Length: 121
Image 1 (cartoon, one colour):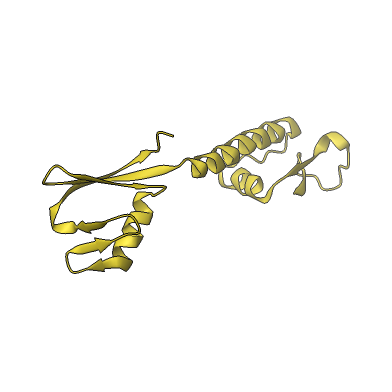
Image 2: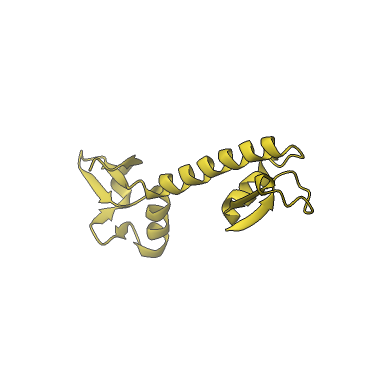
């Protein structure tokens, strides 16, 4: 946590002018121009930053799965996976036309579509 002066005046030690926020919230305040000379506006900005940072943290916690559709009608489902992880794995584990994962061996010549979805569980 870091302490900030809501009105930007570092000589104003009134308890109503001081707030404790995280570095991520401070970065959000700066990036989104939510610092104001008016302490009440800055306080509202800190609340917006807290919500935005928490929402971003929660979105990272959402478990995803990648579904690979093949031209023969079969599908492969990679649980706890994202498209980014899938592409990273593809780059590392691509041998000729096959991709080897911990869950499947996929003939990439037969892949029609790859989509990412939230896990149902």
